[in-house]
Length: 356
Image (cartoon, rainbow, N blue to C red; front, side, top):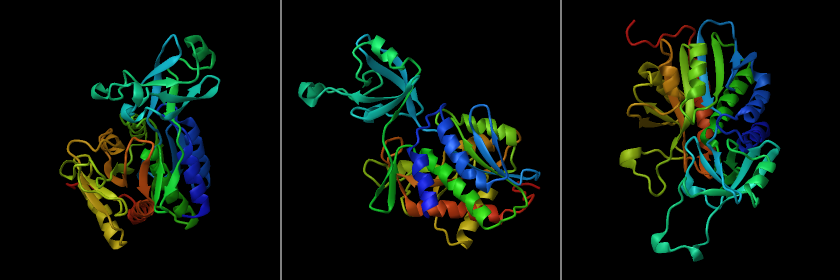
């Protein structure tokens, strides 16, 4: 990874872009993308699409989602403590002692999720952190003071953690799910541009909002674009660390390459095409299966309108929805290569239907 890509990666990952409030991250992403695209689309709720060859009738999407889990202020006590509700799949169990940023009307307000000391708790009756008992302290002594600081019901809060390298091989950070996807699809656009590639179809590089609360940004953009092909990238679980159950959750590992998913929303001819691309280009990959739905934006593109041939290329990740999500640099490169080579191998008007 060169310095330009690395600088963008860290700027983008460390930015705060909670679900419904993705604007700042989307601006960073679009500014990076502009040299590598012909034009762009931005919609009402903040999804941004970099477009290459926009006049071509055959449309190919490569997609990731831009939002991160967070919290909403739900109640402020008279003595100034703040209680929250989830915005996406936020984990109350990890909240105590975490630092937070609250995006108030007067700017960012620093706070902490407090928790009583071990000395004063009856350990035999210890209660786990839950939404009903976790709270944020912003150093205010009254509800009036909280409001004066620009924090109110509906203010969004995110954990305050920055990315770092782990043993040179891994990247650790919050919101790698799935801002790393936005980074990877941006690198595909960059490589196409720098190689002078002329695509015979339109390529739509989609960075969608609001995936964490139900694939909403992808739903809107899928209806708008109605692409012929959609290749989605997201993260999936590395299942090697303690407490995972491989029988239930599969057998995926950091450093072993992209994970290709089988499931009803994944169009099998497109999946087999990507597997063939991986094999020809000697890109190692892993396999996973989904029961009813993939739980990713793949489902939105697959079932929108008349349906788009859709496939999912996932990046293995440890400790999902924590502040120490962990991924492998080698896997990042492999996912970029696989999407890039898949785009290059696609033909104009390629028909993935089962019955023709």
